[in-house]
Image 1 (cartoon, rainbow, N blue to C red):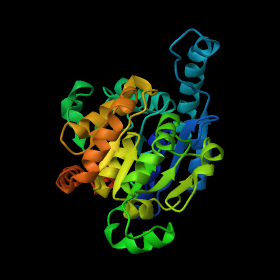
Image 2: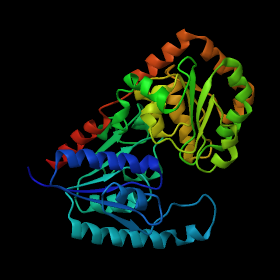
Image 3: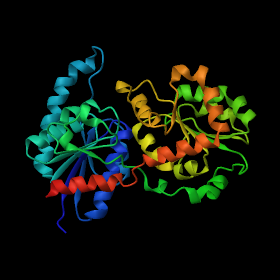
Image 4: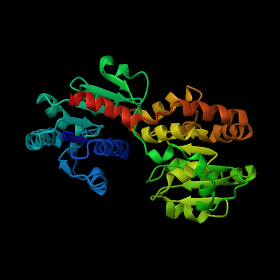
Amino acid sequence: MKPYRFIISGGGTGGHIYPAIAIANELKKRYANSEFLFVGAKDRMEMEKVPQEGYEIIGLWISGLQRKLTLKNLLFPLKLLSSILRSRRILRTFKPDVAIGTGGYASAPLLRVASNKGIPCLIQEQNSYAGMTNKWLSNKAKSICVAYDGMEQFFPANKIQLTGNPVRQDLLDIHHKRDEAISFFKLNKDRKTLLVLGGSLGAKRVNQLIQEKLPFFRSLGIQLIWQCGKLYVDTYKQYQEDTVHVHDFLNRMDLAYAASDFIISRAGALSVSELCLVGKPVLFIPSPNVAEDHQTKNAMAISEKNAALLIKEQELDQLFEKRFTELYRSEEKQQLLSKNIKELGRPNATKDILIEIEKLLG
């Protein structure tokens, strides 16, 4: 089989980086002798995460535009020009067969230059509200892989492929792991378990809510796996007890999902895609502090299909106990949410994206 050269760019956040790595891993399995090069933004997390996965990465001097006048904004034209010139050199040296972008600052200059050179480009959009970079690249891309319906409002309809988001494959069959999960987290098998997810750093308002509601959860007889994040673990580890298990980070997400009966989560694109595969009752509390409020839009895309509950941060004090109690006491509601969210899962997303990449290889 002919070896190919794949150049991949995506970064700034895990939501852009991990899909890029998942796509590269699947390509490597299929095209074992091929070469891979990642392009990221200097000083962003991809410069650490990508080499940990065994891939070479080059960093561009690039950042996003700030919403107010700052020194960074004044430097932006210089950074963009620098990144375009560097991208030209990278592409001239590496000579890729396909360029793949998963969003983030660095993918903008790289894929723009690649498309101008006639290199076929594919972009993958994780969110229900498209990011600025992918919108800017969409007219030049040959194929656009998305995770939500209705993306014609952002992209040319004839280029869109509904594939879903690449997610970890160990989530595809978690149900037989329940006994292992109960043992791993030292849980009581006779109690219902609530899993609380706030991301690797943690979610301030979600953590405040959980701490405030610990007496409420005790009154229901619920035990918690509470992932509070590394920024907050020193604040909340004091609440550790037999029925409250506090973690800064969860290394075995498959077991955390397997142990859970209910899940409270932010609504980042990859979290939503994972939860669709997991198929448990979910209550989304979207972060309001992200670009274009895309977490709320992600959560609404699920809740409007009666596949999850959604409470905005400003509504938590008024609605949380009532909505959670209703869910806890209604097995019918639990089963309906589980069934509906599971139907939205796309377990073959990575393979479907590869089909689109292969079309570009000719």
